[in-house]
Amino acid sequence: MKKIAIIGGGSFNFARAIARDILSFPALSDSHIALVDIPDGLKYMQASEKIIQKIIDQGNYPAKVSATLDRREALTDADAVIITIRNDTTIPKWEKDLSIPKKYGVDTVIGDTRGPSGIFRFLRSAPAFKAIAEDILELCPNAVVLNYSNPMCMVTDYMRRLGVPVMGLCHSVQGTAGMLAKWIGADLKDVTYTCAGINHQAFFLEYKVKGVDAYPQIFKAAEDPDRYRSEAVRIEMMRGLGYFVTESSGHNSEYNAWFRKRQDLIDRYVPGSYANSVKIITDRTATRDSEMEKILAQETISLRRGAEYASFILNAIIGDNTMFEFNGNVPNTGLIPNLPDQAIVEVPVTASKHGMRPAYVGNLPRQLAALNTVNAQCELLAVDGLMAGDREMIYHAIVNDPLTAAVCSLAEIRTMTAEMFEANREYLPMFR
Image (cartoon, rainbow, N blue to C red; front, side, top):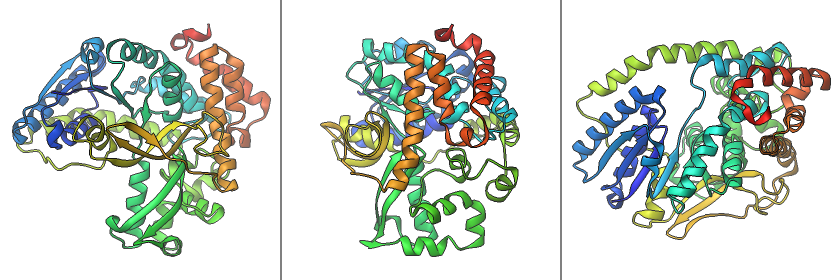
């Protein structure tokens, strides 16, 4: 029986989906799914446990599921660890990540990946990730460790610097590949692609259908008015840079200087700001319990495997050893020579019984490398600043953020950074 720990077991939608996928592989069908969360997530973790038990019963799997608030118990002798936490679930904490930059003209939508919002989310979550890393190194040092938590690049970099060989995972690559296939009426089974860059800003360097370049079809499909309205930012980026980017238009509008520096541009390309995000999350939080109860009331649950990478990776390494190719987030060890050394890059990876081996991609087109480089350097600076306890490094990371630099002076950025430090004082003991 393989033991697979899910840290953040209270994410009941995600936890049940990952457990369902893992158990669907015969070689993993007798796994012990060990859920763990913090006290605030206990109710939702218990719901995850009940749902996963239903999956076990319905699938007649020789598996077991457990739930605990004791992380060390869950991690002891684990063969794999899946991290899916958000360490700032209360609205007042993360709302300041968006509202303070907004005062200075930095209007963001989500703020969970990079920029001032993403950096402070990372800093606030760092103590939790450090504790998790220390427990993994002590209790299951040989486990396969997969991280889904944002901000992906900073979290993955930080945990690797602490000694945990974690692989960062995101669903934006396969999600976008599927979306483009629908745009051009192609069967995804006939699609091959090469995608690389950094998380949430990787680009499809090739996209082929039955071996034929499909970019002309993608450009034509992008002329559809409805598609343009839903993905204006990504379509404009493709027209301007020549390649289609992963992750949604709302996210990508935050990672460059082109779409959010004036209100007319926001209204034109991606309407919405932190106020919309707060409302959406508030509404989602308000309906979370009722959604959970509906799921718990279901008599039967679909056992059909989803598209998330985690289960396929675990099957390749600790299951039946069927090789699996995916896009993962790893340190740049010459994989993309014209991106910063050791920055976390998103590249093709092969999982097998030998572990996870990233592929050499080569240089990105310079226009893509230029954009990726700025964001990657900011992320490296943020992790450097955390580990050194150096506020000035954090300031420098924010100074170079493309959107922040497009709307703020150096002096304004310093004032904004100081205000964000003050707002997060109790959560950032490493900077005292």
